Amino acid sequence: MKIGVSTASLYPLHVEDAFAELARLGVKAAEVFANSTSEAGEPYLSMIKNICDSNDMTITSFHPFSSPMESVFLFSTYDRRIEEMMSLYRGFFGSMNRLGTDIFVLHGAILSSKCSVSHYLNQFRMLSEAGREYGITVAQENVCYCMSGKLEFLKLMKRELGDNARFVLDLKQARRSGEDPFEYIEALGQSIVHCHVSDGDDGHDCLPIGEGSFDFGKLTRRLSDKGYDGAYIVELYRDNYGSFEELKRSADRMAEFAGL
Image 1 (cartoon, rainbow, N blue to C red):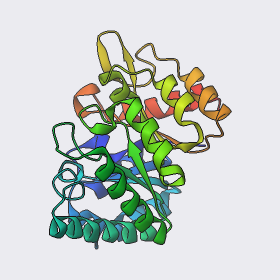
Image 2 (cartoon, rainbow, N blue to C red):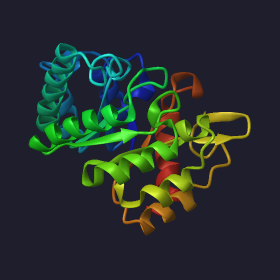
Image 3 (spheres, helix red, strand yellow):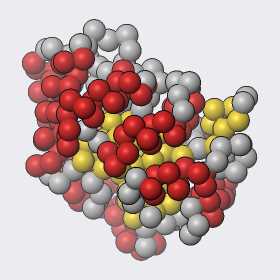
Image 4 (tube, rainbow, N blue to C red):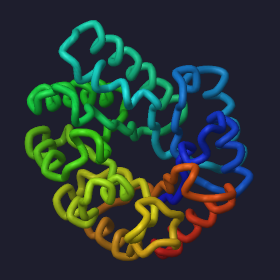
């Protein structure tokens, strides 16, 4: 089990600077949030890899900035835009191979898009199969403003796509959707391959770990019961915490809740 932090939490630091800061803090696992296409290429890949190798850090996953584009590119019905995004994402898959990570986080089409369910499933299957060519698992994140925001849609994906359906459980997004994350675990089970963690309470949907009322012990037990052996990645928005040291404290608290 790996406990870490997403570089998205350090926005707007450049990705290599975010990795350097996490290394300074002693964080041992991190998700790459690439904020530009250039950050999935050189010289940045080598810079990230050198930081990780020098500090015994593991890269758990890759999350692209291009999520807002997915509705009008990948999930559109316009062949040239689809081809462009498939080419971009295949390039990202190759970058992930360089970094030694295999979980690709996908948001998918937004709620206001005109994407039909059947088209969504076809497009997700296509991307998932492309990922497998590189040894990459494409994982659908639950996102409140996307089609993936409701558990019923994710259950449909699992039912219709079978082994092609893999998921990222994001706690703050479940809160924003008014959903119970433990129901996600029960319904999606072993199809959950990655987890974004944050705390929350009645008045806040995203807080540092340990500053809210969420039961992380219950979370780790329930996921473990389903065979989960993936990472727990702290993902906070920049206005949800003060100093970068709070990110390390959140990771440490998460490790305590997980019994590590």
